[in-house]
Amino acid sequence: MRFQRLLTSSYAALVLAALLSGCGTTTSNGGTPQSPPPTGNPGGGGGTTSPAPSVAAYVYVVNSADYTPSSPRQIVAYAADMNGQLRPVSGSPFNENVNSVATNGSYLMAAAVATPNINTYSIGPNGVPTRTQQFDYSQQTQYQANACGIVGDLEFDHTGQSLYAGVGQYGCSTNNGIASFSVDPTAGSLTYLGIQNIGYNTSPRVHFDGSNTYAYSAYNDGCYIFSLTAMIRDSNGLLAENSTYTAPPLLTPPPGAQETMVQAFYPGPSASDSTDHFVFAEFPCYKNSGTPAQLATYTIDASGNLSTTDTYATMPTTKVSAPEDLKMSPSGTLLAVGGKGGLEIFHFDGTALTADGDLLTTDPIAQMFWDSHNHLYAITDNDTGTGGISPGKLYVFTVQDSQISAPEQAPGSPYPLATPWYLAVQSK
Image (cartoon, rainbow, N blue to C red):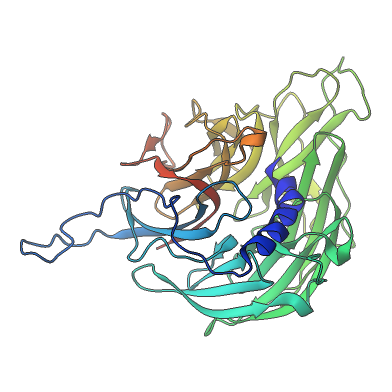
C-alpha cells in the first residue's frame, strides 16, 4: 500500500535526493505538465476580454519530471471553475522542491524535500502560493542529522488551526510518529506542540471524527503487520494516545475461511462524516479468500471508542482491489474509494453504503479530495513498481448528492502530469 511507501522507502529516497541535489531549490525541467488552456481571452493585443469564470476551488499538485528521487519537484496550481474545468494559476508551475501539501483556507503548507523545513505559503486571491514562513523542525520531531525523523504527510484538523505531520523513523527507530503544530492564523507560522509515537509500519495519515476530538490511524500490510492507533486531540491541538480507548473485536470472515497466521478482517484507510460515523476499508486476512476489500461503518461513542454492527455479510464490497484513500464529501452523503484498481463512489446515509455504479476510472488512484461544489479531484499513483502508471493524470469528476447514475467527468479531465506525488484542494 502507498502508506507504507510514504513512511519507509520514500524517506530513504529523500535522503538520497538531498545528497544528490545539494540544496532545496529547483529549476524548470522537461517534466513540466501540459496545462489546460486558459478560459477566455487572456488580454493584450486587442479584442474583448471575457469575464473570469467563478472559481470553485484552487488545486495544488506536487509533480516531478520522473520517479527518480533526485528529480526536482514543483507545485502545479490550477483554478477550477464551477463546471470543474481547470485553468493554470498565473506563474504555475512553481519551483518549490516539496513533498506533502495541505491547505486550511488561508495557507498552503508543504514539507521540504532536501531540508528539515515545513514551508508556509499564503494563498493569494488568484490562487498563487507565496512562501512567507519556514519552520525548521531540526530541533523537534526527533530529527537527527543522519535523516531520522523526517516529516512526510501533512494534514490539518477540521478547523485548520492545527497541523499534523507524519514522521518517519521516529527517534531513529523503526517506529513512526504524528507531530502536532499550532498555526498562527495571522501569519501562518507554526509552533511545535509534541509528537505521538504510533508504532511500527503505521500509516502517517490521521482522520478526525466530526467533533474534531478523536483521531485514528489504521494500517494493514498484507495481513502481516496491522495496527489501529486511537488518539485524542487536546484543546491546544496536541494529539496524544487515547488511553481509555477500547478496541472493537476484529471482524470475522465467512464460515469455511481457511486460517493462516491470522483469520479476520483488518481495518485500513478510513473517512468520517460530520457527526459520529467512520468508514474503514476492511481487508480480508485468510488463506485463498479471493475476497476483495469491503467497507464497514463504525459509530464513535463519547469516549472515542469504535463499534460496528457490520459483518462479512453486510459490508459492501468495493470494486477497488486495494483501497488506499477514502474521502467523504462535505455533505457526508458520498464516499469516494480510490486505490489500486480504480475509483468508486458510494452513497452513505449514516448507516448503509450503496455503490453508485461502475468504476469512474480503472487507473490506480493515490490521493483524492472534494471541494464544496460537488467536484472530486484525484491523482493517479505514480509508483510503477507497485501497479502505478506513468505518466500520471489529474482527474476531476462532478458528483451530485442525488445522482444515481455514474458521475460525469469534468471538461478537460483527465489532465496530464509527469509524476504526481501529492494533492491539496482549497474549496472556495
